[in-house]
Length: 180
Ligand code: PNS
Image (cartoon, rainbow, N blue to C red; front, top):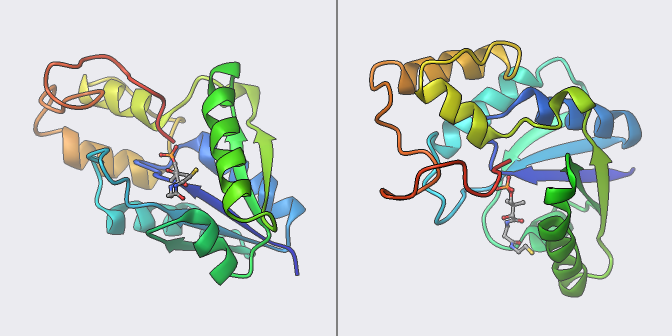
């Protein structure tokens, strides 16, 4: 059984993430979508909310399981008997950071391979950060995130339009590094 882990913050899950999950599910026997707590990133959604959005959005994918983890990713992967970490690649700008993480993960555990999957070109510009910025400013994110995430974004940002600090702590505006 070839089991793969697709890790990320998923704050919130986007249609770009779902595209990668579908691709991974067609290549591996089982895919575990593993939600990280995002220490130091001040996520908009709680871990439970991010897991719930993924459970709903991936409900029809029979070989996809949603879980959360903390600590080292390679330790979690080994505990799950997964030999592959799947990462999505959108643009060249993703490469350097992903390359660094893949090499560090390999250094920690040589038995776990990182596999990169290209997202559909349609989603190559899409990130959780840009979705949150648009939603916070009252723009439409229809077709960019699953329906459940759209609802959650409205719920979290709708009543406090423009008060969500995009890109991190106060004083730092803009998108910052892309967030999965
Ligand atoms: O969606 P993100 O925020 O880009 O995902 C980053 C994530 C969660 C995949 C990464 O931060 C991670 O692997 N965290 C687990 C802790 C760990 O193993 N760190 C060392 C990685 S080199």
